[in-house]
Amino acid sequence: METVEIKIYADEQTNPNFICLGVLFLPIDKRKKLLQHLINIRCLFKKSNKWYWNYSDCPFKNECREEWHKLNNSEIHWKDLRDSRSSAAIKRISKNWLEFLIKNNKRDMGLIYFNLLYIELDKLDISRFGSKKEHENIYNKFFRTNLLYGIKTFFGNFSKVIIKRVYHDEASVRKHKYFPYLNLKKLEGLNYDKITVEDYNVKFLNSDHRTYLNGNRNFVDDCQLLQFIDLIIGATTQNIFYLSNDIFKKELAMIIRPLVERLLERPKNKNSSYHYYKKQHIGVFPKYKIDRAVKKMYRLNGTLMETFSKDLFYTNKKLKMPEFDPQQKTLSNNFWVKNDST
Ligand SMILES: [Zn+2]
Image 1 (cartoon, rainbow, N blue to C red):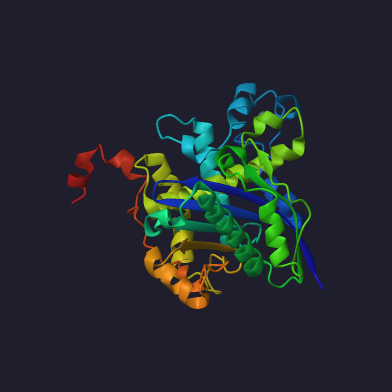
Image 2: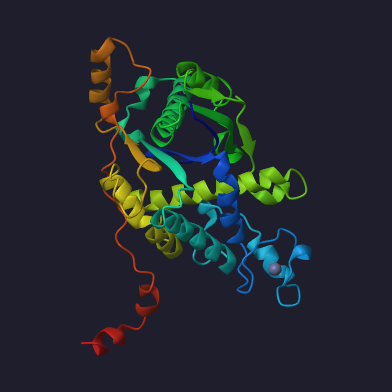
């Protein structure tokens, strides 16, 4: 009768054509280690490999600089990243975070569990679902679907999963009236023998941790994890949907592309050198236009089922973003290089 305690960090990315619900599942006993890695990556001073939130605590005060600390102490936020506008510090940290994700996988460190679920709105005849309330119901249903899939797949070996708390970036959910409380209560109610939710109230945080530096330091840590899942969602979406032509976003997308490709093509490969099986997952819904989907669901039991039919979820989505070589941005101007090398 083994029990695992987890915390959950959720974020979303919306677009006229899809919603991505991204969830990071963090077992409590791995929390400290993952945070250490993410936070220390913020220190870009070569001689040090440990980050201090206050410059006054930095042991390299003669060589390190207060202004560097200020720059490294920024929010990492996918939406705001731009090749021309983002600081060198923000660029470095975002790259290193995604490189750390890959290192975690290649070395099978087992610190990072996530489930990304894409709902393709252009395949759903939304008008079928009518009112705003029904939209919210769809959102909530898929949020539960995401959590349930992650819990069953990633923590299936445990007889009990205790959700200590769910954290969400406050900016992205204000519109979802029914999101907190009832949703988690329902999740527990449907799986009461397996899942316990300790706190039904989702904790909404401003993902910019600087808000909390003089307050609750636990929230500073929680914000790192919200920023991390935001970055994973952004870089994955960039590969799949190719929303941005920004060079830096493409460069970031390329870092995790080998993982994204494998998750979409062979999600159940136990032998992958990326060790993602039962730790990370990307799902897409629905496989067919909802016309057929709805028919199917009606056929099954006469009414809309609580959970959408399993075969409507799929993974083998093609990447829209073409391969991108970051080195080429320097070479492309030197057209003579090409001629010279023939
Ligand atoms: Zn320093």
